[in-house]
Length: 444
Ligand code: PMP
Image 1 (spheres, rainbow, N blue to C red):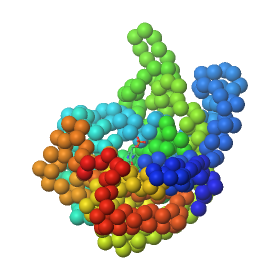
Image 2 (image 1 turned 180 degrees about the vertical axis):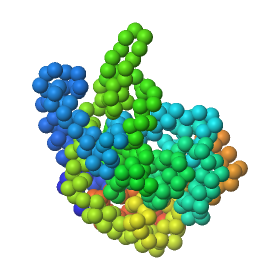
Image 3 (image 1 turned 90 degrees about the vertical axis):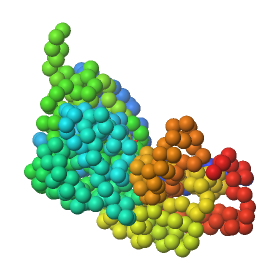
Image 4 (image 1 turned 120 degrees about the horizontal axis):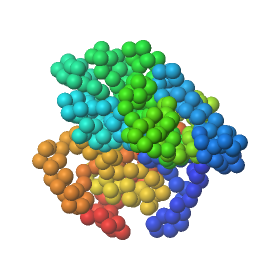
């Protein structure tokens, strides 16, 4: 779709046995490669390289204007009401959620409802801050919305937040975030959407603050949406962040300091301690503008085509087990992420063969979502415990897990053919009795 606009798609990588091949990146859920526009914009900005907010010099004024403007570009991109909300730049989604977990001023009796399908970044920050309760999933690994209602009913006012991913990094399942928001607001609670996996694939409109379907908090990372590493975003109501001092304080966060008092700066400066990642913000702004130029209509259509094409072919391979209920891609319900295993071949070995013998980059393991993987694999408590103990001893030989392919808007059906051919070869070699672990250091 947009291959020529992306950096590094022609990169050749070495193969184990001989030669080189063009790298195929099916690991976009980890990070997407960067748009060329972000690079050009940063290159141009480097001539105006200067710190923001504090300098009287011309360059500093220009840098400040550009940096502050990106906050507006981001707010417009997700439909945030700029009077009521603040757009805070952080390092990544993980930092955004940790910041929110601090800013909500939670105490012991408070409850945060999250789900069994979350990335660890939307589980661990809530622990030790509040009691964490997990929403159940149905047999397909999708959220059970009746459980949301019954938990909100049961715990009432104690529920300070419901924290849910917009799309899963394991199954690609999209959650009905606006429907969920309506339910959450009915019970006078608030909703955080971890949009790390949704933001590059679907348009997001958090809606105006008085709309019952409004998303209260949104977190995402630039490196998953064709901008470079190092910038994340947290959007939420100004009121939340005005209740107390920031999680990190220091330069840039204040209006005035005396020996015994601090007057905090306006938002978002108060929440962006120290010199921010100005270059990262410049790149993010350029990337968003480019995404808007392409338009999500095209992106959704293309990625859903890739998803369907792959699901069709994978289902023809008897030895491939798909997780969740992966049959046909539905653009409303799933982004381009597919988890699978090949019968009797460890996920780590499949991923290593794809990388070393076909130049295909996938990810395998638990994808920072251990509870979800345990659920999808149907592990018993005993098995989960055994695996936990083994991992604590740094014994990875029996690590449960899956292979994950995840698409970007630039992937092609030709690349998928290459993947399917390689999987077929792996299966054939296994069936002919060949020792697949030969050349690899895997012992499981
Ligand atoms: N949430 C989800 C759903 C993710 O997929 C990821 C990244 N894999 C994160 C949070 C964390 O993102 P980051 O590493 O950029 O903080």
